[in-house]
Image (cartoon, rainbow, N blue to C red; front, side):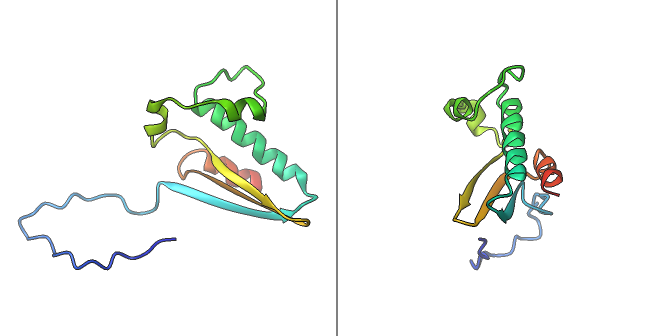
Length: 120
């Protein structure tokens, strides 16, 4: 969630140069998919997309067939952790006896476009 900054910061003096930033949208994007538990095809597609994208983003051997367990064991380097342009996809799945909720996050201008295409 986002809260407005209600501080009473003084307006910049006329002679101050204020650096303009692109605040058109946030750098990261999140999508939430809600589906019935028995709809596993979409889940499989999303998990495969996340795995493929993260192999590429982490510069792992893309010719290798990585299992989800192997990908969970991959540790990012300090350089990768600090790279805010690394196009990884993250998220989680929550479910109960009838519904599955999938949350995927990533760079708005990156692989999230493929996520959106995948979920329709």
